Image 1 (tube, protein in one colour):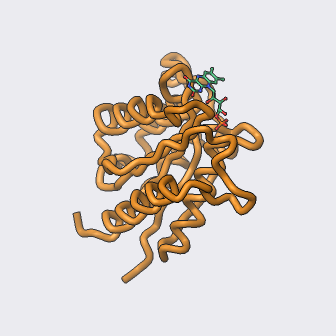
Image 2: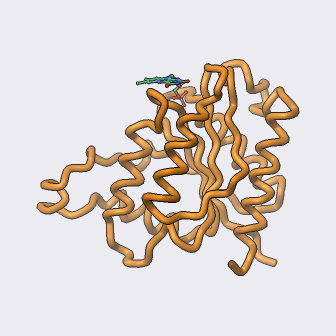
Length: 190
Ligand SMILES: Cc1cc2nc3c(=O)[nH]c(=O)nc-3n(C[C@H](O)[C@H](O)[C@H](O)COP(=O)(O)O)c2cc1C
């Protein structure tokens, strides 16, 4: 069977971002699990803040169309997000908003593929509230299928070892479970 193609990215472009660490680890784990991950950074796809006038004048940015094509080329997606004021960060929301508005290619990139989500935070909740908001946007806003398994990495500044792995075996297990399920769905005929 062909390897499951999984797109992986973080909702932060900050140097040393904790969510980027989780995205990198997810990509590494996916490769170990015999999937085919593509790890990208949103820093390579800059876009202005969504503005209806700008859209009416110029259409969606080329980077939104590129990301749309990128999504369509993968069957599964893993998104690692930070938490900003109990929600998802504007970078991630703006990116999803623009992708949803770029009608080129016409095929809806959120339907027919599977999403797994994870969060990182230095707090005790591990960015859990950002996961709720991201799930709402993906499922209710965009009609995507988001797997129930998710990971919220608490006290994330201390959570990763020198090889980028999760020190806590329970946390590592949550990530593994989420990615294993993502691969199973990505390989399914659903
Ligand atoms: C505007 C803003 C709001 C934030 N709100 C929260 C929050 O609600 N909960 C939380 O745990 N951390 C919050 N933080 C802290 C971020 O989680 C922390 O800066 C994190 O390291 C950013 O993610 P990154 O490391 O992936 O860049 C906030 C940070 C900013 C800049």
